Image 1: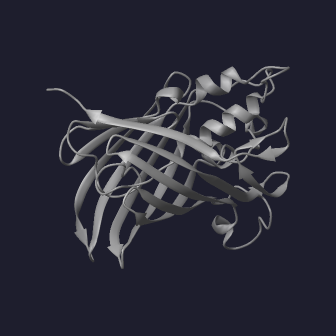
Image 2: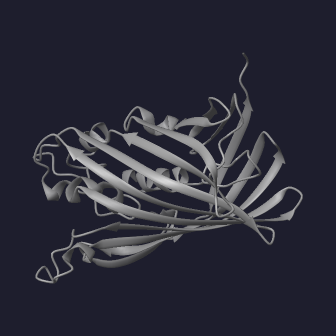
Image 3: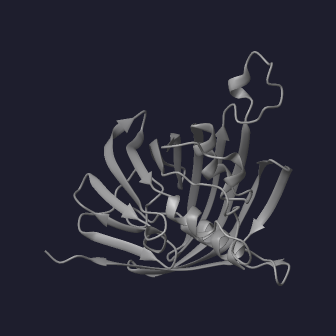
Length: 277
C-alpha cells in the first residue's frame, strides 16, 4: 500500500495543463499576478508579479521540501519563452521509507546522506492551427554530501529515474505538451516526457560514446479537463510510464492498485483564487 500511495502522489503531482494564462503550469506563461492555484495533488502556484511565479507541492513539502521559480521571457521564432529553476531535498522521504516491514522500500542498514536536487529548464509555447504546444528541455543535477549506496535507489516507475540523478550526478529531460479546446469548458491534454541518465548503465562500457549509454524513461499522459469556472476544474485520464530499470524494461499504466490488480483513472480536483493586497 505504501508503494501504491507514493507512486500515486508522483502521478498526480505531475498533472500539468493549461487554459490561456491560467492553469498554465507546463507552458512558458506565468500565472497572473496575485492569482493562486492548487489541487488535491497539484503544486500550489502563486503569481508573484507579471514576470515571475513561485510553486511548491504542499503534500510533499514536509517530506520533500521543494520550491520552483518560473521567469517569463520574450519570444523566439514565434514561441513565447520562459525559464524554470527547481530545488528539492528528498532525504526526509528516503529516511522515512528506510525500514523493514510494511512501507519499507530501502534497507534500514544503509545510510542516506543529505541530498539536494536542482533542475533548470527552458520552455517554449505557441498556438499552431488551434492547438496549444509547449516544448521544454532541461538539465537535472543531483548533489550528495557523502557516499550514496546504489542499493538505496527505489526501482519503481516515476521514482527511479528522478532519484537516479543522485547516483549518476546529472540527467537530461525533454517534454512536449499539446492541448486542444473541444468545447467551451472541455479540453484534451496529451504530453510526452523523456528522462535520460547518461552513462548510468554499465552496459557497453567500453563504447567510445559511453556518455550516450544510459537508462531512460518515457512518460505519457492523456487527460480530459472539465472547467466549471476559471477557479475550479476536474481532471481525469491516465498516465503511462515505460523505461529501462535495473531489472529490465518495464511498462506501467498508472495509477495501479496492487490489491485489485488493475488500473484506475486519475481523478484530480483543482481550485484557484485571488490573493488580497
